[in-house]
Structures are given as structure tokens and as C-alpha cells.
Image 1 (cartoon, rainbow, N blue to C red):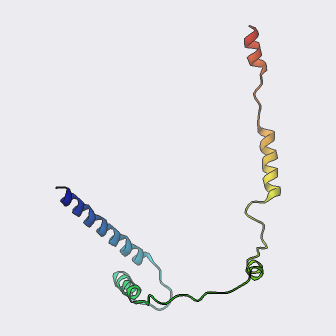
Image 2 (image 1 turned 90 degrees about the vertical axis):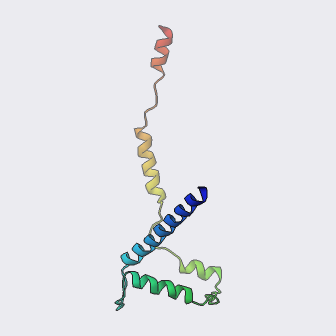
Image 3 (image 1 turned 120 degrees about the horizontal axis):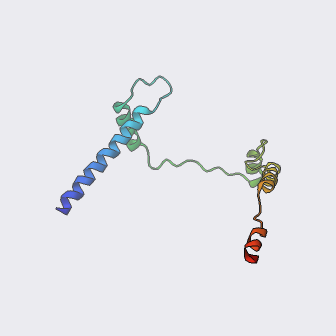
Length: 110
């Protein structure tokens, strides 16, 4: 009985996985003049992936650290701007209300 349950769930998961691949291939919008879409495009792309050369490795790129960091310089402000963050913290500090201890002292005296 346990083996039958396992096989049923295995078949269900494989069917769901294939349905996800099929939906993803149908939803994909292709650029260019490719007229094949849907399930045929999925099968063609799947076969093309199986046929690709496993030995094809991308060429390595040798570069020094100075060139690497010079190529990745951003002119826009960073994700977290220090001035903006400090302004927000100052405004939040002004809104914070500290608890007053006078009410607890009044209860203790009574």
C-alpha cells in the first residue's frame, strides 16, 4: 500500500512539473520572427538544451581590480543615503514619547 501511494504521488508531481514547464513556455514571449510557440516550442527548446555541447565552457576574462571597480562606478546616490537616513531618525526621535514616571510614583505614595 505504501509503494502505491509513493508511485501515485510521484506521477502527480511529475505531471505538475511538466504542466509548469508547459505553462512557462506558453507564457514566454519570444522576440524575433520565430513562428513556433506553445508546446512545440517547448519540445524544440528542450531538445536543443539536451543537444548542446557539454564541453562548451565560457572563456575566462582576465582583468585587474582597478579596471573592475572603474567599470562598476555608479553616479546615482546609493541605496541608503546617510543624510536622508539621519533626517528620518531625527524626525522619529522627535515623535517618540518617553513614559512618565510621575504616575507610578503617585500610585506608590497613595
